[in-house]
Image (cartoon, rainbow, N blue to C red; front, side):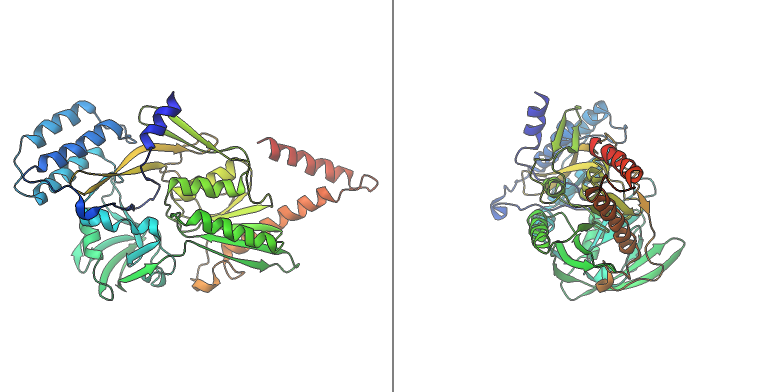
Length: 447
């Protein structure tokens, strides 16, 4: 019964795991969306009803009695235009203490489809509003975009946009200032640690290929399959599947899966990609506001069983954390890099009656071991800092990449250990080593 209820909750809705200020969805019949004539309260009430019914409170501060009183207050007022109604909605949502539940005007809502279609117009950053510090924080620059090329980093704070201070600015205002016509420029004031500086970036239309792959060869001649996933958009699962199938034909000995600076994306995409590597076992559990739990598992159709190492960093968030958490908890591979971002909440995108939209937090997710990583992140098995001096984009995933180098070294060690087991000869004197390795391998299998 519980699984049935939660399936109904998520049925025919796009579920997002971006640790960002925005998500994407195709808006069907946008031009034919209902236009309310002097009935702006209907939009307000639609938002109120969605929150009342589905919102999952991660802060513990949400009180339904206060929300009910707030409805009476906002609906008792008169709204002369959509702008006033939309401001009322944003004020209403600010009471939730949840930066991921937010309102999108019709034009913004229609533009958000870019996240799932694999296209992006802007400078290529993903941002979130920190409720505690009130800062606008960059989750991660998207690889290959103006922001990435300019050296913008995860956790950078935006102090101003075109000399307009971001103090007290909400995400919608920031997005409007950052976006603009292709080819125009925007100036950001960035705070990194204790130092501030300015970056002027060109706005571009960017088509993002979510997955890249190649074969790397170690000093000992081993072939390593390198797969980098930049976003979990609608194309990511198929692209990853194609990459693995191609690398299997090239007889790679193991895989390095690179999820660094991947801000997340679609829930189903992260589950599908986990199933490419995990044959059986729990991948993730989602828990709704009513405590309804749904568990996703491997489907017995993994594309490879070869050794695996996953690269993560501070910009690996949401869907990236589902995949890396599933691989770590299932003992399927080792995580190498830095602690992940820590965003364990699930958003659903809802279309409102006038063509605007709402992203609302509807669930939290737990790793296979039942761990809630929200705000805490996932600690890798082997912690490695990135290069002190920045490397070129083409050097990512090469021996010049310090984290990749550490990941490849660990992968080679795993491959060697597996070969020791497969090549064991009981007539030789390596019985003690075999028993020790085999004991470790049994623990590996049982967990």
